Figure (cartoon, rainbow, N blue to C red):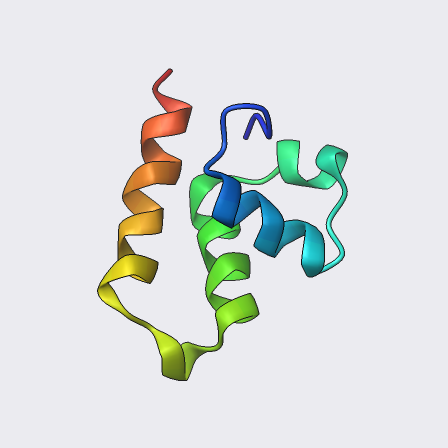
Length: 62
């Protein structure tokens, strides 16, 4: 994943989980989504959280 094109909220969450831009670049959309969910906690899963997967998948297509 290209961190330059990634949704800002997702990038912030991944960095707060301790990921570097290098490790983020190596992630698939699914891996980034799992890390995003882990940052927010499974119990807080909301429509906004689920929409992040679609945003991440869209970045791969660019």
